[in-house]
Amino acid sequence: MKKISFEEIMDMEQRYRSTLLNSLSGFKNAHLIGTVGLRKDTNLGIFSSIVHIGANPPHLGFIMRPLTVPRGTYHNIKAKKYFTVNHVNEEILDRAHQTSANYPWRTSEFEECNLTEEYTDRHPAPYVKESKVKLGLEFVEEHHIKANGTLFLVGKVVEVILPEELITDDGYFQAAEAGSLACNGLDAYYRTEQIKRLAYARPGQEVKLVGG
Amino acid sequence: MKKISFEEIMDMEQRYRSTLLNSLSGFKNAHLIGTVGLRKDTNLGIFSSIVHIGANPPHLGFIMRPLTVPRGTYHNIKAKKYFTVNHVNEEILDRAHQTSANYPWRTSEFEECNLTEEYTDRHPAPYVKESKVKLGLEFVEEHHIKANGTLFLVGKVVEVILPEELITDDGYFQAAEAGSLACNGLDAYYRTEQIKRLAYARPGQEVKLVGG
Image 1 (cartoon, chains in turn yellow, orange):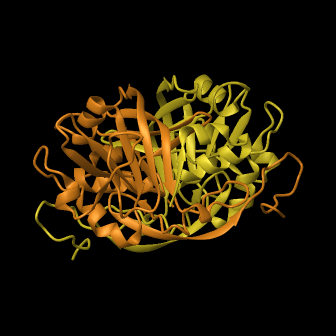
Image 2: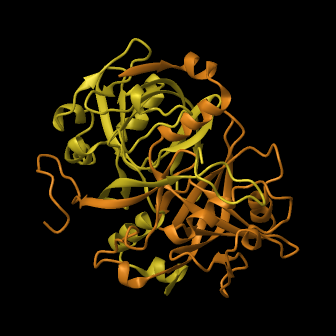
């Protein structure tokens, strides 16, 4: 086992450090965030920092990098108050990754990356038609991370679109069966295989399987 | 495809809604957070909300549920300012899940769940000896999520302990090869299989493999 100190991390070549640190937080999701601006210009970007905040009422949050350059996703969310979160599956992986390219301001990644906008009556933000799990969110608050200028944005889930047959009797949505991917680091994508579901843990009881 | 509205989510039975919403954010990590209090009492809890915040300087954040009950992890972090993040692997999965049981205040989950405390000279928080990827963090800031009273805690990475041979030449740490798990929802654990690493995307260029 190798021990690496803060000082050694700070001494690393910048790109190496970024690749290493991004992979140390372990597995995460790969989702496309879709937005629209005041002039109806759409934006689509891949994010891997979406976290569950609460179920009642339903909220998610995600990390937005510092506003050192114009960021279409942030700009549109502040302008129109809505955004969508769309799970990435293997079929659209290359196109989803391509949304991370640095396109000119107000170019739509939907068009550039060959993904299709899809709308509902509930809110103005575009979903990704090719995604199988789509969440519509209303922006509710943001927090400025003083440590490095990143932002933590929070949205309320106002709509969910998914294959209903993948929800188990107890409410668990089987994301792996929907083809949703995991990722690690900046650029590594993974499919997953379930080991097991473990029942609610209680002191002094053996760990059991769900339903076991 | 089924469309579920905010109102339908709010009408769901509480446990069903919690299980569903926790699984809709997709894949995430499964990590043990280790802490110690002022009286040297240790605490260990499983978390799935750790997110990368930045590499330069290195920071991670995570979501802490509302303080409606005493929370050992939060109490200790505020008291001693340090915590550890330890990747869960398949060998310790059952013991890691068991740390989520509601043990009496100041009971150590290390002891109750048969996991071993490990210390370095850098800071006072305990690592999990049986974990293969361990990060030591210094608490730097917290944010109160107004939507539901959860907290977003941020720490600076001051130490990393890992199998060095799993870092590729460009700095990517291969978490899957270290046996780190992904999870989904409240209780489902997954092993992963890499599909591919994709190179930095550029406008007008075809998506390429890393090194390709």
